[in-house]
Image (cartoon, rainbow, N blue to C red; front, side, top):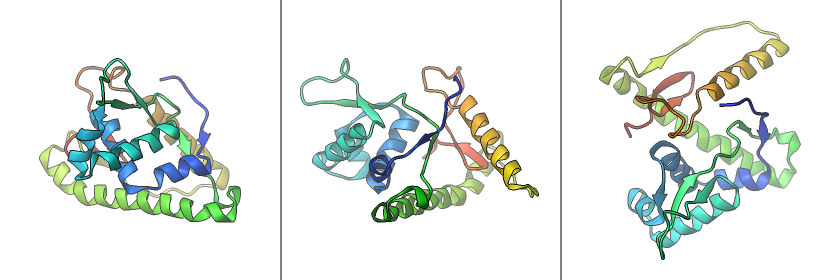
Length: 186
């Protein structure tokens, strides 16, 4: 994967990601690949009209796209776009005051997802420690060193962030939060 510059999430894209159903849909498409509105509705216990609406919102924000060669009639197939992968939220100061609640909700939802993954980690480790790893540490850094550390960490993640088509045989999707475990065991 080639290097890319980080992309700032604008308020509209941030809002698209600050909805629980959209996050679940995007996560499913990222981990398991293409799906239809009907398939996602069955997985999420939602009506097709609801999933179709949220898929259109994700498409409008540029996170997913229809697969025209696979779609027929009323059945539309969706996949994650190959858009930028290093997307960063704005700081509160970069947003208008009326957009800040969306940023707070975006972070709240992300941390809730991380908490759920963290709680699943011990069972994943017991199943197969070759595929579940954690690292804890303490470092003393200046502000500049911390920025350098963060950028190096993101660059390392981007180096291994491949699409299913780019991944070598035997590659699995992995949740990585300075602890890592398979994403395909949900």
